[in-house]
Image 1 (cartoon, rainbow, N blue to C red):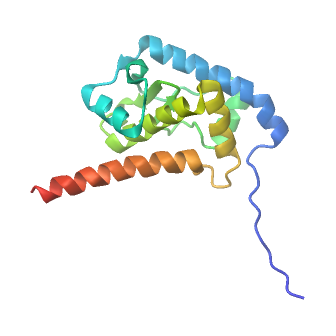
Image 2: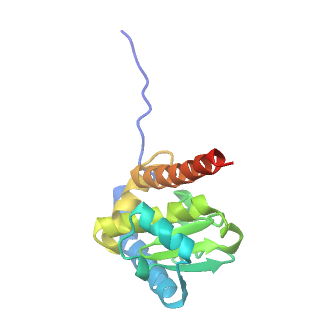
Image 3: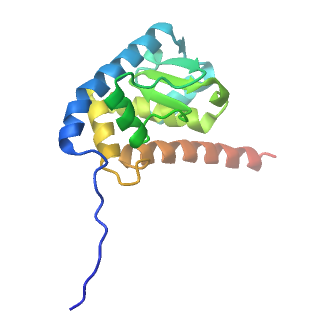
Length: 175
């Protein structure tokens, strides 16, 4: 008899914990988005073009806030879950929540990172709003055994990388 050992991916959070934390995550996300929409700055001209290129529809609503460190959830269980899943940690350089982009000041010049965040803004718009997007994003991430991948993250990484690579190729063509 042949026995094959197959490693089955296990969700990072059990369903009960996920359902308990989901409303807390949405409330935290809504608070962050509202703060950034109120205190952030409109997209600079270059990022307006980038937002259009990645599919953001309501570009005028997007706001950016540069920070020294990422805001972490204050609720201890939510903070622990976000660290464990590596969704938001002390080492994060940027996050996009709804129409809000929070970026560490030391990462401001990283165009690929900014494009990645703008893709998340477009994803949120496509999902039907912040509450639906938070659920979709968290389900995608918490069910992924590798934490940092999932359909939404893969899409954001791919699009940002492709745009930067295409522009680098175009620039080298003219040199």
